[in-house]
Length: 193
Image 1 (cartoon, rainbow, N blue to C red):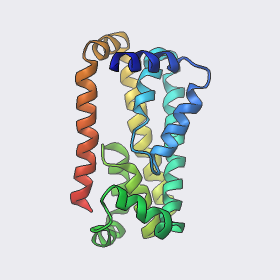
Image 2 (image 1 turned 180 degrees about the vertical axis):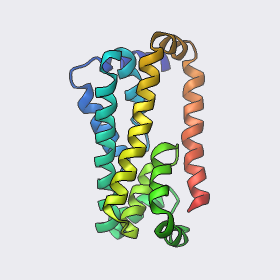
Image 3 (image 1 turned 60 degrees about the horizontal axis):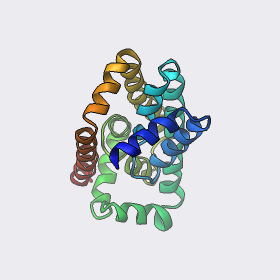
């Protein structure tokens, strides 16, 4: 089943609407969706290495704009939308202590959330709740998300076929490792909040 899903994703990566799907996934992942856009970014770059920079740019743009949507959720809709999202992920209890730290280290926290497996959606909502400066938020988001997606695209562009062969050979293990990294990001932020 995993192999069929991989094959479908690889074939979808060449679809004319794949860039829009990537933009959409990157957008919603930055504000509420738990699955990162890498699931589509990786096969898209592997399927069309010549478009690696365009693909990374679309992913970055979608993620940053989605980050502003997450910010808006925190700023305008914290009680009705943001708080339930944080409660869903189990982060609401320690949130008050986190706010004080956030006001002091906000730009660095956004950058760390944009580069690491920390759940970026929690960072974007927290930025809105704390009323972080929009310029600081935007610059930190653009730089960190851009570095993340362009670095992935650059590695895939440079190594190309050997990476694709490696992914196809060790697909099961890579999915397991990816899941552990994603889960550890949620666990790590639970201790930070």
